[in-house]
Image (cartoon, rainbow over all chains, first blue to last red; front, side, top):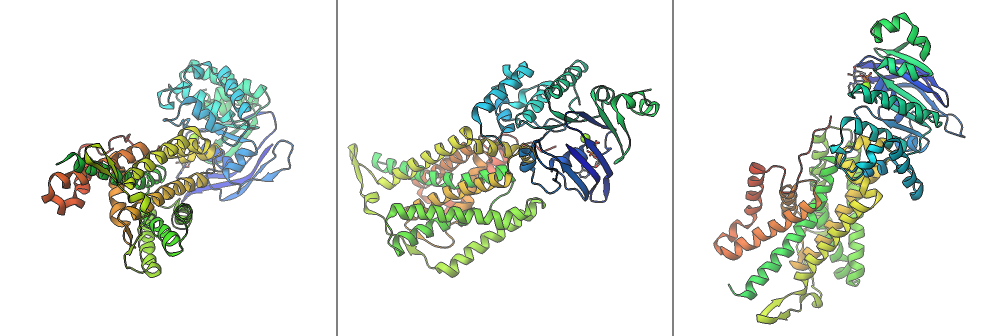
Length: 239
Length: 298
Ligand SMILES: Nc1ncnc2c1ncn2[C@@H]1O[C@H](COP(=O)(O)OP(=O)(O)O)[C@@H](O)[C@H]1O
Ligand SMILES: [Mg+2]
């Protein structure tokens, strides 16, 4: 569904992503783990079209479509072809209500009744949001904002859902809940690219995993393989 | 002061204030989204006045048609300014766009001098707008004086409806908080920014047309002082806030008209009041009356 070949990203003189290649199969949860500053967000943001890439290819195969190199595609067209991102830090629009944030997530769609039923679907996933539907985004707790960011990313009905550190800053009990919901969304047919620092939780639900270290991918494998890899255990799983 | 005179001043203040308000909405929308002071906005207002002058007085079209053409032509000019002078600088430091804005303003003013000549030209007012209405107690009102605030309030109501009840309005409010997030949700942000420029320019055109009728003349530099004052009104009302811009404009209109009405000796300082108001608000409430603190983006 998505294949990245030899991706390089520079910010001025900083070489943030170095020759990264990875592949995501339809229906899988794929995780990209790594320390702070490794370049995870840069990779995921380049797939969305939010950072310019310096070289490499991003080949995306939309549902029932042919593979296309989307590296130069405008962001809104990437959204239309089925890619969505729940960004690091959630980025809830603070002055819009919960419901308006969700409606904005459905901006590319015009099927009014479908949008309303998808809002209801998000409310069944996250009943807390329903209680707060008329509240401003800024009044939500961190956990609620994360749920809203996830729900908002679902509103464009993406085929590939990308999540940038959805567990960041959440209480442990909420972390479990968020990962449970990611698994549920995946079981309903969505392909997921999950970027995480919480390597243990991410590897447990991932079909395939890539480890990013200072911009390069040196280790990859199934989630289970990496969970059992002594080097990974030492570096990312606390022994 | 007789009741008649007071009512005259009151209507005058409301008209002038509504005109400042209409202009200041364009400043506040663009600033709210791009954090850019669109210095060319006062000149867009001037173009609106000239376009209606040419359409109705030079080419003798009827007023309704002339007004429609003037609004459309002015809106196109506003869109062109964004497309040519600001959009290529979207990723550049903010100061670049600001310098570009000053350049566009000089360009439009001097272009107007060349094309329209620097001479002020009189505008013939339609009689129907000038025939006084006599109310009880000898109060006289000119229809134009009532038309201006009525038009302004209808347009502001329509704009608020668009912002709060439509999809492009939702995108426009979202963009003013976080352009990048709005973009990643599939909004073509350049279109929405263009919409903001278009709406602001259309409102400035209406203000320019009404201004030309009120004063009644047009000249290439007529946008400078009202432009600056409308910008002050936008800051006063809380930059980024549309109701704030309107309220700021009306307060400014009242301060100007009423201070001269009650203290005729001060009439020489008329234009200074706006700046005095600006200094006071910046000292005591820099976010303006309705403004919220603009948070720095992470
Ligand atoms: N907009 C930017 N400008 C300059 N440097 C950046 C920018 N974004 C990220 N970087 C740098 O690129 C590197 C990778 O960052 P990032 O992709 O955010 O990593 P991660 O998401 O893994 O923490 C870091 O060194 C970071 O400082
Ligand atoms: Mg990151």
